[in-house]
View (cartoon, rainbow, N blue to C red):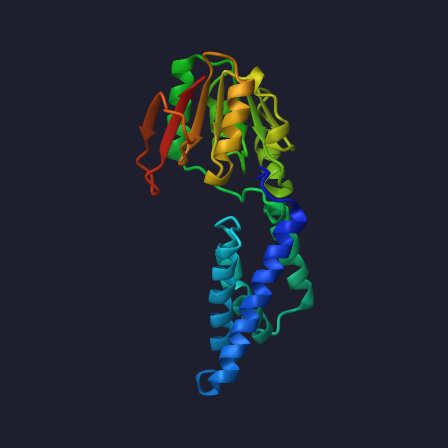
Length: 252
């Protein structure tokens, strides 16, 4: 789930710069008004807010803002709890396995609801599709139920190790489903009659180009929640789930 705008080192540099400038602002404010900062918590909150604002100024993807906002407060909280150093390593490892590549500009994990899976299954049935792809499949919340319901080929594309492993485990008894651990950008969309994606607004313009270049005429692309700019959808399906999800359906 790659966003091509910024190489990995640029994203990391912006993240470190936002944190450093947030810390510098908080320390300066504490030096100018020491009465306002009797404990570390106020300093951490100010640093987090400043870092998040700098992140926005650096035009980092929007999911970096809560990371910057919570980084220092969470670090102080964990230090106060005097947790084992091994726990820090375990948490870092789990985060890396789930959000693999996010620091390089990739899209983080988004999960689809059961209602979305039901709606996609209905669309696929109307299309009478024989091959289906889920781009950025996560833990298979759409791909697996679809493969269970219909005798069609379902490919779940996911590059993050832990979500892919969960999807692969869920697909183990489904001969028509394949969990592919690879970037969606390496997927050849020409094989599929219907392609589904729940990604991010940041990648929709680039993904639009890939869809138009590779998908065959008459095939259908479904984008969950985020429309493709400058492309009128054939239909919009409203979902009665917690997020009031909309499925934007584009006929190639």
